Amino acid sequence: MAATSLISASNGAFAGEPIQNTFVHHVFFWLKEPENQNARKQFEKGLSDLVKVPEIKSYHIGKPVESARDVVDDSFTYSYIAFFKNKEDQDIYQTHPIHLKFIKDCQHLWTKVIVYDAM
Amino acid sequence: MAATSLISASNGAFAGEPIQNTFVHHVFFWLKEPENQNARKQFEKGLSDLVKVPEIKSYHIGKPVESARDVVDDSFTYSYIAFFKNKEDQDIYQTHPIHLKFIKDCQHLWTKVIVYDAM
Image 1 (cartoon, rainbow over the protein chains, first blue to last red):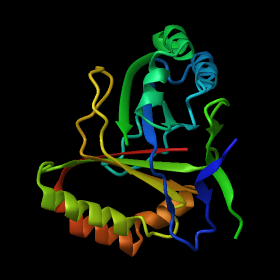
Image 2 (cartoon, each protein chain N blue to C red):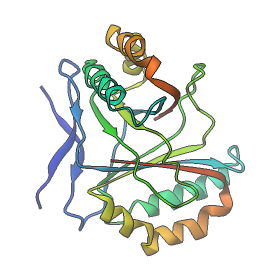
Image 3 (cartoon, rainbow over the protein chains, first blue to last red):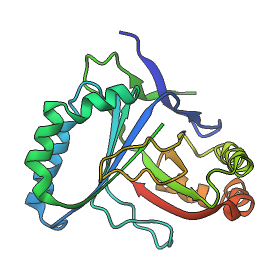
């Protein structure tokens, strides 16, 4: 198994490293009941299953960092980034049974989703 | 220099690796003249300088991948993600002279910016 490092943690004394040749699939979820701990648990369980799709190279699951700056949208409930090798792998992911199960099991939990795909 | 791998490229046979303990700063830019090649060049030069802020561990610069799906917003011109060790490093970045120079030199090029910060 060839493992090429795409992100390394520098000690801060060197400039950051570019992530290249990577398809970034960034999804923001606004839950219907963001304060409902059961809904959050169910959603987090859904995400933890979702990231098992084998085409995902890496992923980040986050919550908003609050900010007073106007340009910052901190209204979402969860941020989810999946990194893929290329568009073909992301296409496979879109129709993968694990992804379809996530949508089926969890879509009642959210009120709004925005996806940004970038390469 | 300790270099800990945060993202590794798997061969697709294994589940993806989580990126943890990382502050994700994702910025979407809508340029005023997205078809203007000079404006694009100037903006890309600005970004290439911006990512020299030493607190940036890694970064991704992308363009939208078009999609017919309703949930996908592919209207932006550039996507820029900077990964930081923590909120403190991102705070340093916000007021770093390189960042302030980027805003001063390039803000006339864009019409809209959205920032999502997640941890």
